[in-house]
Length: 199
Image (cartoon, rainbow, N blue to C red; front, side, top):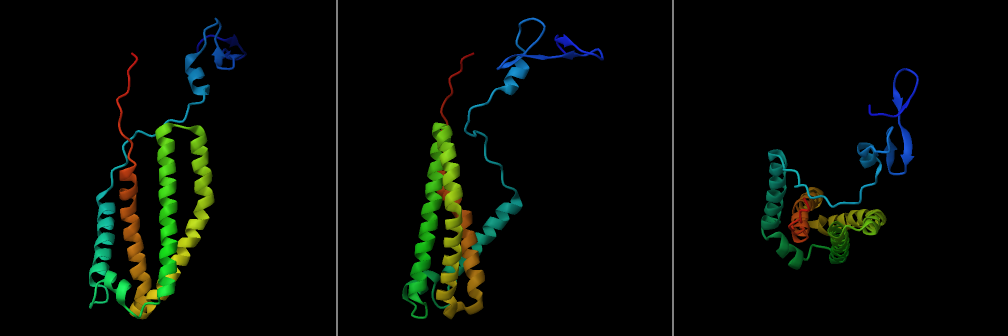
């Protein structure tokens, strides 16, 4: 230990000298303690994203391949997109309401992504707080909207695939969740700027 006020037991006790740190026996400020006691400003994360393991990549590939199979083969007579546009067995009103719900969820996801990107770019403490509040208040609405949309889609498509409608929609949902982060975050990836060295 560096110098300080002697106490019983042969040790030294450091005394508070200033709000920024501790002082030793002279008037020198202990820089190590001072650095730990200061609050650090919010800094954007510049670390590279973690690398995905081969099992995660395999899972993503299986979701995408299953969704492509569903979209291409549809009901084995027509592809999925053609069925959505032209098949008379589909209940149209629940289908359109489900699409509106999914559209609202996508808009919420894009809005929170843009807000997070602007906070990361401009390094604003108030922006970080605003993003946290917005995410917390919007999350229940997004969850309820997603569940209601899933139920509406199931009801609309039940006449074609019956009990297979639920795993079919779940597979399409998981493929969408695999793809959407690359579409959104690839657009808002921050530019790496040269940092000015002062040493």
